[in-house]
Amino acid sequence: MTQDDLCDIVYETIKRNAAESKSANDTVLMRDVGELRKLSLIAAGIGGRLLSAIFRCLCYDYRHYCAGLPDLILSRALYKDSDTDLVNLVDWVGECVDAGLRPTADSGSILTDRDDDFLGCSMSDSLILSNQKSRKSKSLQIKNSDTQPTNSSPIVIPERLQLIHHDRKIKVQCMFVEVKSSNDRLDGRQQDWLNVIDKLGYARVCKFERSTKK
Image 1 (cartoon, rainbow, N blue to C red):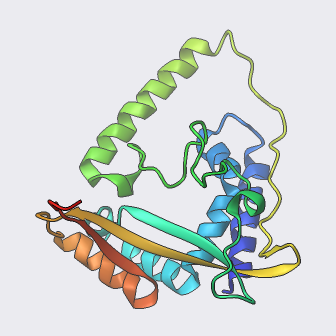
Image 2 (cartoon, rainbow, N blue to C red):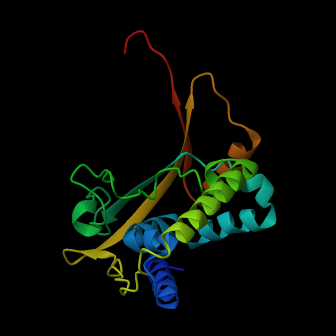
Image 3 (cartoon, rainbow, N blue to C red):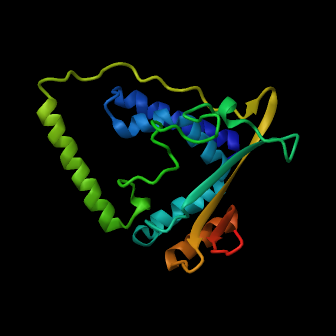
């Protein structure tokens, strides 16, 4: 799939899920809706071949690959008619991005680890956290069911991310980065993920070293 195709499938999938849900009470769905353009940006930058390889790993051996993904995803967009002219993500994507290209405090940043995400911790820890959150959520729903009306307002879907800005076509690039201190070592799962990603995309290890000069 081309980068445009990937933007289309992200948009159509979230749009379809929103139409089937018809409720703004679905917090996971609303997070996807609120970050639709960023999801499209990242999907386009990673590319169809690498996304397929990532999904294949998770389907093949989820217990092994449920952790160890690199810490960071770095994203940038360039105009196709130039290899150095960067696109201003604030103007183009807009979504929860401030002038410093940092997610705002209330954005629920897509690039930030969440305790309830499987890929952010071990499977056993994640299941425990997920079950605790589920019980808490059900308790709150029962407690507030008689006092709070159901939110049935229509879900507003952001505009599809178009790979064009100021009448210039855009290409997106993503890089995965594992961050380590100078005395820290990669474990087996981290090595596996870096090998999978770097075969079809870009993966690097960033090591911090203590220096007496700096």
